[in-house]
Each structure stands twice: as structure tokens, then as C-alpha cells.
Amino acid sequence: MPHILTLVAAPGALDPALVSRVRGALEALGAAPGTPDWLAEREAVDIPFADAAAEQAAAAARAALADAPVDAIAMPAEGRRKRLLVADMDSTIVTSETLDEIAAYAGLKERIAEITRRSMNGELDFRQALVERVGMLAGLDVSALEATWAQTAMMPGAAELVGTMRANGATCCLASGGFTFFTGRVAEKLGFHHHVSNVLLIEDGRLTGKVAEPVFDRNAKLTTLKRLATENSLPLAATLAVGDGANDLDMIQAAGLGVAYRAKPVVAAAARARVDHTDLLALLYMQGYRRADFVTA
Image 1 (cartoon, rainbow, N blue to C red):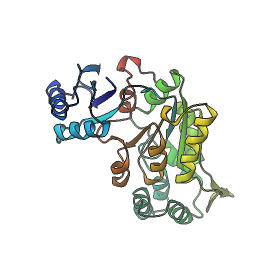
Image 2 (image 1 turned 120 degrees about the vertical axis):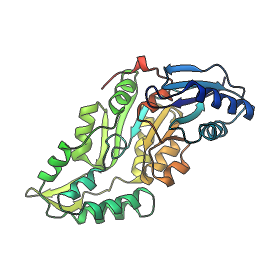
Image 3 (image 1 turned 90 degrees about the vertical axis):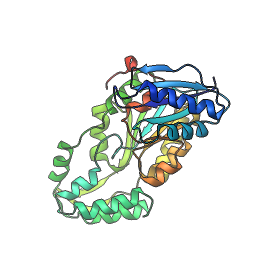
């Protein structure tokens, strides 16, 4: 079969009856579905199919699932396992928006978080929004960065995503519109080979309200994906990019497997693959890894 539809739910929550319903939807589409292959019992399953486009199959599956909290991702069977991962950090590899959390120490979290929300949904220019938000933090003591890091949690599945892909020979890069203060720590904790992001300028132990040039923006993320693919002699078809914001969209659309992860509406609508309900383990299941294959970073 040339295509695979992968269904992923919370552990123990994928009802075989739902799988049968989705398989019936593929039959109605004329996609000639094959026998389901469980990657993790009642959590993730592959359904091979033919004679239908991946986008059509995914749409049919989501319609059949209705309101069930199950992610459906369709892709070509050939080349499923990717050899380069480029991942956003905030609200993707970590659970929070680190700049918003820093702002809490200046009493500006709600104000800055609203700018972040609009920027990540593509309503504001990323560079302009970043400069504005960082400027509002001028004079803040760097202890706020350490306090924010102490409260930063990894996204469920992040350690397994990086650990498993790395163990299987993939290069892993963290590419963030956030700051090196955090990306360096996250990269070290999870085992990313590389990290690229913005640099907060600090003088006498306080934020100056500025970031170093050039700003690491939407285009820089795409450039990073292409550069690392070239450096590793990989076609873009062998790459995976994941993120949630508008500044991730170019790299998501360019990657062989581009995933909108719990993404802002503008990103979810434009990405070929979406994870709306589950965690980062879904990125391993959609590459055909079984639960027994997972390695923790």
C-alpha cells in the first residue's frame, strides 16, 4: 500500500470500534484500506490504504472520528522515518511561552502574552512583536530568567521524540524565536545536536530591552531546515519540522513531514499534518515507530 493513515489517542483510549469506523470511511472513499497494524495497543494504529490522496484520507478519517480526541495523520508509506528533526521550542518542546513567563516577573505577563498570541497566529510581524515585547522588559534583573527556567516543563513525549530519533541516526535541532538562555538548556537536557535562537542582551545583570541582530525569525527557521538538510546530504523529503506558531509555518510547509502541533488556527489550517489532541509521541507513531521502540533522551 502506498499510503498509511495513523490514528493516535491517549494511552488506552483508542477504541477498536473507532478504528473500524475510520476504516469504513476509507472504504467509502474508495481508498482500499488494508489490515490495521497496532503500534501500541489501544493507543496508536496504522491503516494502510491506496487509491486516495493523503489529504482526502485524513479529512475522511477526521469526519468519521467526529469529536473523538484522536489525531489522524496520513502520509506516504515510503520514507516515513525522517533523518532530520527541526523543532520549535515554546509551546512545542516545552509547555510554556518562556517570554511570557519572564514577563510575569515584570508584572506584564497578560499584556505581553496577548502580543505573543497575535504574533503566533500571524496577526503581527514576528520581528516587530519580538522587539516590542523585549523592549518592555528593559531593566529586568536576570534572576527572572533563572526563575523562569526553574519552572519550565518539557512537553510530554519530548524526551522520547528526541531520544528515539537520535538513537535511529537522525540529527535533531531546536530552532526557536525565543532565546539562547533557554534553548541551550533544553538542548542539553533532551539531547538536541544543535540549537539556534535569539540572544537577549544583558548589561550589569539586567536586560537591556534589546536582542542581538540578526533576529532569528520565520525565514531563519526555514533557512536552518534547508541548511541542515544540505549539511547532512538529505533531501527535504527526509526532514521533519514541528511547531505551533506562524513563524514555524514556512519550515513546516517545506519539510517532508511538517506537523502543526496544538497549533494556532492559521498554522493548523495550512499544515499537511496536525496533532491536536495527543502529545509529541504522535510524531514517532506517524513515522512508524512502535511503543516498544521508544528511547528516552
